Amino acid sequence: MERIGSHAFGPQFSALVGNGSVTDKVTPDMMHLIHPYWNQFPAMEPLWSKILLLYMIVIGIISWCGNGVVIYIFTTTKSLRTPANLLVINLALSDFGMMVVNTPMMGINLYFETWILGPGMCDAYGALASALGCGSIWSMCMIALDRYNVIVLGMAGRPMTIKLALMKIAFIWSMAAFWTLAPMFGWNRYVPEGNLTSCGIDYLQRDWNSRTYLIFYTIFVYYTPLFLICYSYWYIISAVSAHEKAMREQAKKMNVKSLRSSEDAEKSAEGKLAKVALVTISLWFMAWTPYTIINMMGLFKFPGITPLNSIWGACFAKSAACYNPIVYGISHPKYRIALKEKCPCCVIGQTDDGRSAETTSQVTTTTNEAETRA
Image 1 (tube, rainbow, N blue to C red):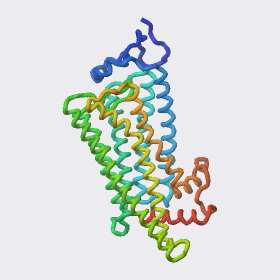
Image 2 (image 1 turned 120 degrees about the horizontal axis):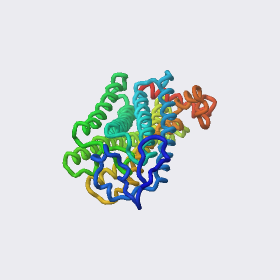
Image 3 (image 1 turned 45 degrees about the vertical axis):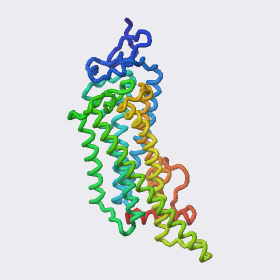
Image 4 (image 1 turned 30 degrees about the vertical axis):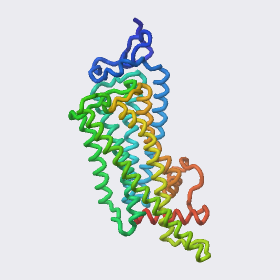
């Protein structure tokens, strides 16, 4: 049987006979982690591995650069170092970390078209991806709750302080640590999935140990944050809409163009910030929902999971890590001003820096005041 000699390093595999199987290249030390379900599928076309590798490199570079710049700007700009923005920095750190871990490891395995790093690294990959993904979604949840506190509760809400922000960050990583470490102590496990170039939670095992973990994990890492975010933004949008409607009606009665005071402008600016966060969170759920559906299909034994759609679901979920810096770069006035000062080549279009129209400048100023108060 011929040997594949195109790789200058790593394991060498026998050439596949006929269609082969997706499990043909599995190394002996990984065989005990491969679910028999994958044996029925022929080997994926090598072209798909190349496409997936290119995809991971592209989103990895975007995430490294984008989140790296966000972390740099938010930590070095005095006006952006507010308690509420600690949650934004935490979100950028989790997204940055996810792609630092995922891109090189998954890239190596896509190159060899199977998991070659051994069981220990499979556990490490699955655990870190789970922890950073959990940290990302709960950071977004805390950002949404903070916006709810400022915009809906207003003066009745608890003001954000550094101590409170650090407590929230501690909760985020405690939650991530619990759900990440549980499989390493016997509640479910991390195994290769899809075309066996990525590792994640075992969603094909039929025993109740594995199934209960997946059920509770989905509830606390997907549905609970989703509910809290939807709840927060429902009332945020309602409050902002009601306020704007009242202002328009009152201005019409008084036959004036606008009744907007500095406090009203502050509320409007906060509403704009809420929309930015809402877009970011919507993109996150668009990325992670397909992978959640794949996990649920495995849990409830629905047909249709294949190596190709499973690995694409895992890769597409990771694209969430590159959305946030793009959204902030486009929509956050203070961030754009700081970005133009420190990294002008990263700014596209005009910034709200005082040379813009008077109205835009006023929104920028009140946004700053709103963030300072938050």
